[in-house]
Image (cartoon, rainbow over all chains, first blue to last red; front, side, top):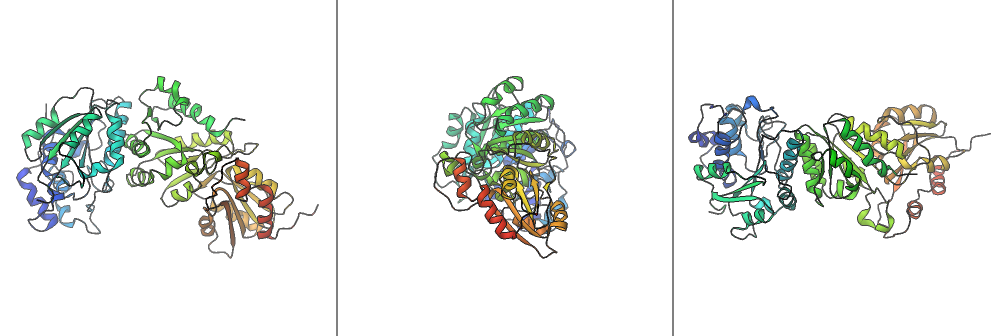
Length: 234
Length: 304
């Protein structure tokens, strides 16, 4: 595939430094770093969206449903030029557009505001339907959720609908840091597969594995990639 | 006479033909009415099954791509069950939709409380920026549906009911109409309450305003009416009593005034039966209204 992402001069190695501008130390909460590698691979190698294309109807959509702990998200958006790096130190302050949960109205490049769990995937379903209804068959829709977020019933409504509806432009990446209170190993992919999705579980820290899973063909079916990272409690 | 809900699918089907931005999202309820339209516009008539959180969330996603979603089911399942989706997926995302409900306060009494939603507009009142249409006749419903869909990307709620006035009036999607003028108080009749209010105030020296668009609340019309009729105000609403009391108080904040809010009581009746029985139980029949309005206003008969 051709990569249209503009190199803003920041690489993966710069992300910890960008996150430190927000958190002020070298420690980052598990919620903040669990998404880091999946986000980077998406924005660096998969998503066809740039700051210049932020309003292009043909752009890929990335919806961060897991809005809690958005430092990795802001760091990636800054690295890719969607938000100025000098916004990062103000993180969470009254005058900052960057809150502890993102607001699409305030953050350039953010497709949705999130924080309350269970909203991103249903909105992503509607986004995929809306693009299809306008004959926009090229853009892909990505939504990132957490494993515990899948407990929300609203996600089950979306999963159960999207498979039989054949929404093949829809992609979900589940960051699995074993944070759900009641879960069976392997249960996440099985749940999606039972609803007709194409599913794959990979090491959520392995960039090549993530890239391969993100770009695997899945004709006629929506796709889920379960990205396993270290348990939240580790 | 047909019902407001009977007009919904034909009107919106025509809008689907006329405007490529319009999309309809359903959760099984009302699907049959869109069968023909679905064949013409398979990607813009969407039934997502019995999934009301997805119903509103998907509507928001459609709006994010630039479409104008019309989202429909019974009021209980459209406003109350997915209320956080209404708040966040539409309001917080800063996108619009047209929510069209059926089975209002007690349209199906034998269905019981699970299918009653007298509090829908009070709930929406906790959110910013909603336009609320409460038509009182199927012809008005048709007009207001068209206004709602044409309202750019606004957030609009259209409340369809099987309760109806006998005759339609011209409605403009914004203002109250003056139906009768008097000097001893102002009565605001909302949507299907107009016939009962006119009967209740027959011969009384009061001004009657007719509201079919209640949010934004037409403060200017209420203030104008009080110039001649004084600042005693009665609101008669087909949903939760007092829903618009704060709006009326705000409209008259700088004047000494009194407001009485009449509507559906908060207490669950736990009764089935007929609509008329529920109207009477909530004191919304013409005789009860006359007692309560007359008592509050101390209105005297117009001398012949």
